[in-house]
Image (cartoon, rainbow, N blue to C red; front, side, top):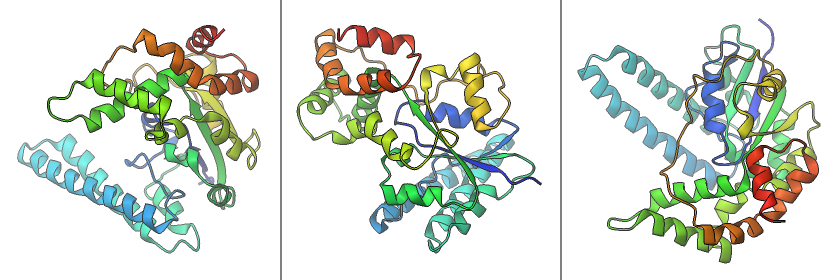
Length: 298
């Protein structure tokens, strides 16, 4: 059996990483565990590790409860899927909790159950914020590695992220759109919601990886190109797989719809101007929605 390539996605939040995971998870040439985000390289800090273990343990409890319901309903498909999720979650907890002096537990977790698939997968958007020492750990892996950074139009990504935060923080009786607007105002005028901005700060996030990996190992792409066509075919070629139809994969984690106030569009675009300029200066063939929003800044 040939040695596999590890494909790591370090794309921005709300930029298509879940869609990419689902596509690759179902691809015959790719082996992916049922837990999308490993968070291995972002949890060398003990505080971050404990936080991630709590999340995984909570997920495990939820899966166990759903499994009881599936068994009561004699739903074989759900039983099999949930059993796999439980096993994979427990396996990841063990991998994260293991001795970090080497990466054997991480690589063993990624490969457990692999047959002849040629690509392994770790889709963890939070890796976009890794420190140089953490990125160096990826470059030192004893396995062939490729990295994919996904970008989405800055305005659309920001508004999607705002809506996600607004939904999670919504209190009883609170208006969703008003909450969205309040969060956006804090993004534009304070540092209270800095995490929303940093997760989509392409210039610095990409530069940190580009200093370590050359273009044969680090590719930057647009989430708008995650659809059938020559640009998606090129992405698949870089990932090391044959392109198959992407049409059967539905958009993932579609947020609650909320109109973007026209009065805030200009201010938000000005706030994001550095990101548009950086991408336009460094990457060719901007998607149409990027071009239209840049034109509004002219």
